[in-house]
Each structure stands twice: as C-alpha cells, then as structure tokens.
Amino acid sequence: VCSSDLDELCNLTIQVINILDYVFEYCPRLPFDTVVFRFLTLHNDDLLLNLKEGDYYRELGINSTSLNPYYSWVDRWGMKSWHDPKLEKTVFLTIILPKDTKCYYMNIPFTYNDTKGFLNEFEIVLPRDCVYLIKSKKEFKDRYFFTLELVYQVPTKDRPIDGIEEKLPTKIGRAHV
Image (cartoon, helix red, strand yellow):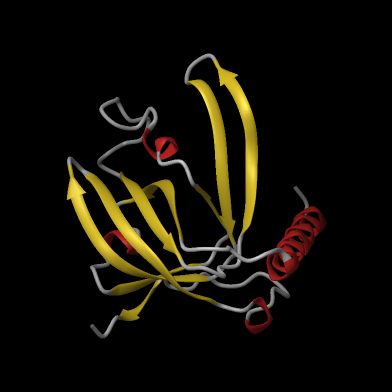
C-alpha cells in the first residue's frame, strides 16, 4: 500500500467520523432514562480493567450497545472462549443512560440464525467521547462486570477531527463521593 492510498483511507475515515458527529448532533435525544448493555474483550493491560468504583472512564470511540441483555450473554458464558485468557479479559458492561442522551436507535430486523436461533437486535449507538462514572465493578471467574453511568458527552465542536490524533488515556480522575 502506497502512502497516497493510506492518506486517502485516513481522509475517508475522517469524513465518516465528521458525518457521524453531525448525525448525533441532530438526531432526536433519548426520551427517558435507559439501560443498555455491551460485551468487550480487552487486553489484560487495558486501563478500564484497573479502574475502581468512583473513577471516570472516557470512551473515545463510537459505541454500539444493545437494549437486549441477552446479546451480552449469548455464547459467552460457560463456553470455551476464542481468545487467550492469559492475554485478554471478558468484560460485560451495563450502562445507565440519562434522558436527553445523544444517541441513535437502530433495529436489526428479526431474523433466524442457524447457530443462535431467532435474533432481533435493538441497538443504541452512542457518539464518540463519552465520559462514564464507574458505579460498580465485580470480577467473577476471570470475567469483569461493570455498571457505568453516562455523566458527560464531550461536544464534537470541542474536539473536531481534522487529522489523525494521538490516543488519549481513558482514566480521567476520581469521583468525589
């Protein structure tokens, strides 16, 4: 891949991010407090795994979550994991979203999948740069369970994407409780 191809790919990526920022600014806000779910596999050295209750977690990327808790659990509990547990950890997130959260709803229609049966995804997509308070953290059988509460969404006008940026840390401080 030549440098100009990479530049084109980077420019396209920036355009997509800016378009999605625009979508999040103008789509309807969440009409009421809502709880959503997300499943992750993280490397052992990921900052989120070292955070404690009362800490803040800043997620820089756009996040897809589900209104259906089943999707966090299907094929992931009690079965052999596809990743190496010595290098990666399984993380289940329960996220509390307050009324008026910037997000959009997407429904993947009811379908049948030979391996999982009937599926119907109810997805809430959150914009980039959300700040969460860690309400609880539990570890059980090498799996992490977090309850997060969305406390702030950084306005995209305060953090425009003009070029490739350095990765920022996810830990931004301790809550005063």
